[in-house]
Image 1: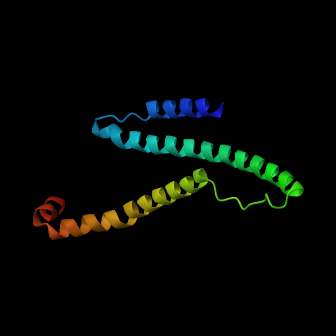
Image 2: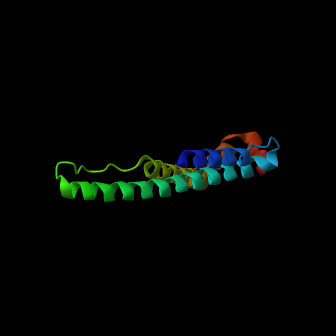
Image 3: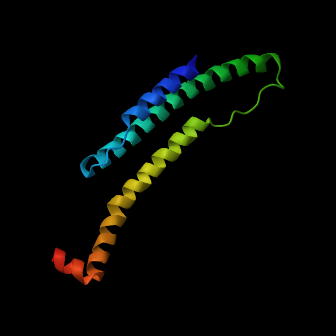
Length: 119
């Protein structure tokens, strides 16, 4: 029941994230693709959170009847993947803001032709 809805959402997201070949739209489409991916991951994390809550409630009820059944629950894969994705996006943003300008400055100062072109 839930799987067909996830597959439909996934195919819609893939259909919206088609990359254009012209220079002006490539960055916009890549950003849109990342946003759609992040939205889908957030939806999966919400669904997995609800499933985890239901599982924990069932586990508590069963634990009341049988103390041997209660087991610690590991963190769900969707929330782990979401945290990794957000960390990666944050790292890319920091590298773009801090490292890229310094790299361009050092390249321009090292390359005499580029230095003449940029003044």
